Image (cartoon, rainbow, N blue to C red; front, top):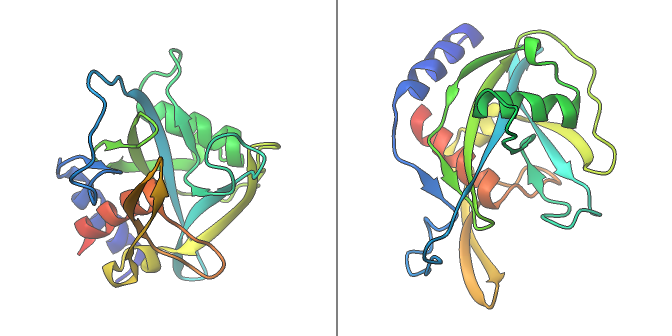
Length: 199
């Protein structure tokens, strides 16, 4: 499959509205707080071609952060009042966190909302990086910016269901490790949703 074919196929796959995903998908017995208010957020899954292969850009969060220290994540964050929409949020955050200019991104589409255990309604935005840029990790927030072959995260066979204790209970989650990088939780679940559409 050529890169152009991949991009076309991905655009088509993202046209399907589909159903929302959640950090609770693998934990059907979880009791969600009544009256919970979810905050809107956007993350960008930037993909690019290099030497004939397509890669996905991810970040490793700073180990000094209060929330999710050292975890693998998409560039992104909560929506600001000044953002035109959640896609604008994802593009703004990607510029802040990894130095990716919004004008270098061709937005291919979005995945359905993903609810996180931390109370966010996240919109995953899939973007094609159409020209090179200088990666600049945001000091204090991003420890490392790295890339993973897109083929790795699009292959459902690479995903595992694992579990750990969280707030006194065992919680199951998806993981899709790659080399030294342990990609898990919400990031892995959103990637799994993309993989399911591309089958």
